[in-house]
Each structure stands twice: as structure tokens, then as C-alpha cells.
Image (tube, rainbow, N blue to C red; front, side, top):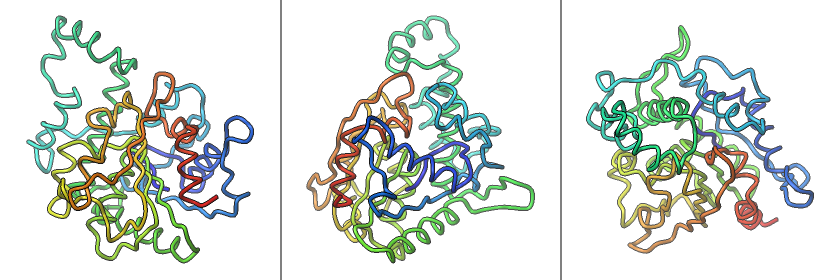
Length: 307
């Protein structure tokens, strides 16, 4: 398992949260990995970009959607600016597409139109949505451009290099525990999983990949995955021996620009990624808990794990 953007509880607590979310729901619908004899581990990278684990573990399990979202963005820190970016043009382009940098946002007429055009689709408080997308911009920028980052005094990481190392280490350890071996990734974690499986030769192979709420369909993200990625042959055939299942909600603010991946990650010009639209409920559609509660997701995971 590999998590997405935002400050997280410490690694073991986050893994327990994910396992509980997977086992929860109406009786008989959840997947209790322990009871099924399935081992699991977390590729944990929040400490590379955030100063400390989130002590409010309960917020990440909360049924209060806005409280859970706030816990993801409370400790983003100072947002990167175009002037401080490794590639200001790339950052400005992506920020504009995410509706963060458009100068017209301050115009009352534009905001009135925006309310009917966008807020209806993503009915979140505008300030909160901005903060979340700012966190996404910061995290994806620092990873794709391998920025040197100091989350705490005395600790500096080359972000991409360090997170790649952690991913490969966990995949190698998991491969020793037997098969099938499945990677379940969420949000920014899908970019990390794809990058390692496609672009890092020493990364071990896995049997299947699941991506949830992925931003991999965004052009600016794909631009930074070249030359290994091409639209006609972007499937990591050497590292994914079986299926790639992509599950999305069209109203998920991270995936919404282009939620379907099959046409962007072909194998030999053919669509092979299986895109599944599985609508979540409520205000916050990007929630990991909601994806894990989805019966389509659970059905596919059971199949991939041969349960």
C-alpha cells in the first residue's frame, strides 16, 4: 500500500487505519487481510515532506468529511510559488488547470460563474479546496523534480530519490512473502508507484497494480514521466505481470481532469488498463476510506489476491 498527499499519522498507525477501512462496512462485505492470511505493508513517505506525523489519528478515520480533509492540509507549510519552482512554467500551467492561479478568481463576476460551473461539481468550501490542491501541487512538484527538501532541521532529502528507495525496499520485502503480490496506491501514491514500476530498472516486478483517485491522467504529470512513458506504450509491462485496475470517481478533485487512464497508458498501442468508475458519496470524493468501502474495488482486490 502507498498513501497520497498530506500529513499522515505515523507509519504503523496509518497501515492499521487502511486495514480497518478495508475490513469495515456492512457485515460480510469487508476484507480482513489478517483473517485471510494476507500480509501487508505501507510505503510511507509523509515524513519526507512533512515535519511530524499527525497526532490526530482519529481525524483520518472520522465520518466528518471536512474534519478528515482538514487533517490532510493543516500542516502543508508554506506553499511553493512560481518563482521558487524548479520549472515555473510547468508549475504555473498545472496550477492554472487546477484553478489556483487564475487571476480572474478574484473578480466577482468570474466567481459567480465559477460557483455554477465548478463548485456544483466539487461542493467544498473554496478556501479548503485551495489548500488541498496547494498541498497536491507542492508534493507532486517536489517529487517529479527531485527537489532537495528539509522537512525538519538537520534532515534533507532528495525527494524523488528517497521515496523511490523506500518503494523499492518495501516491494522487494513483499516479494519474499509469496504471491500474488499487489500494489494498492492512492492519490499521489499512484504517481510514485507508476514512476518506480516504469522508470526504475531495479524495482522488482509485481503481479498487479491498483490506482485509486489518480492524477496520472494529467498532461503535466505525464510530461515528467518521459522518455520512459509514451501514450502508445506507457504500460509497465516488464514490472506488472498481470492487471492494472484504475478506480475513480469523476467528482474526485485530484482525478477529475482526466480520470480514465487506459488511453494514456497503452501497451503496444492497445488499451489494457481497466478503468472503473465507482462513485463515492458525500462532499469529499477523494477519501481513501470511501474508495476502500466501494464494492467494485473490493471485488477487484479479492480477485487479484485470489481470495
